[in-house]
Length: 292
Image 1 (cartoon, rainbow, N blue to C red):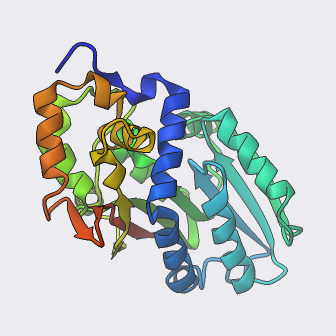
Image 2: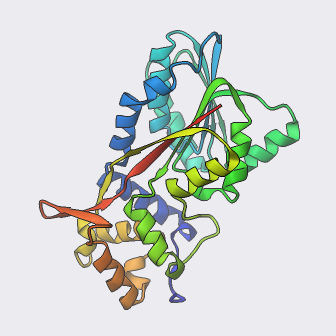
């Protein structure tokens, strides 16, 4: 590993920008939307049965776009029922965006929001100290388990917070995605950051099996258009390279042989499909629904 290569997470604003480019160039949110429209109503069908209030916990809620989609489905299922929505999110910037989104969204009258600026493990420690474990009807952890140090302990803890008929929804990259191949092959040659783990649904289902926790897993196809990555000096491509490799300024700091190797691989069928002159990286997602 070249000493000049450093983790993308060491430059927060560049990370945020590369993440934005990833969302703009991928079907990530459309894929989640499809799941929320087709599968979520059946999953939440009984979470609020005989309850005067539905308690929802969002771990790593980000800027709230997906959270509000989830809440609207719960409102349809349980019209008029009061919803208590608590959000655990370490980024102050994301919390501000979430609050702005709530402020300009209508039909949220029966929802009470609370935000906690902390990581999931900080939340866990705080709750454990209080010794009064509040039960939740629905907990979701969307694209955040990469940032957790001890995943099995985290799963076990949040599973212990489930009320009657409650569920946990976990979304993360699929074991059949290009990410899985990329991390397995190149993870050791890219700058690792303690903040982030290479974890896919294959690892996660294995952990849940070991814990004896019941779940269902759904895979949905998602792609990321990485065509710009193969155009020299393309700014969008440079930011997508950073996101793919979790490396700050990968294009200019990576050893040429490493870059050439990854560049070649990214065009191979196990990583991407070529369609109408575009290179579409396999960004498939897994939706794991954990039972109480």
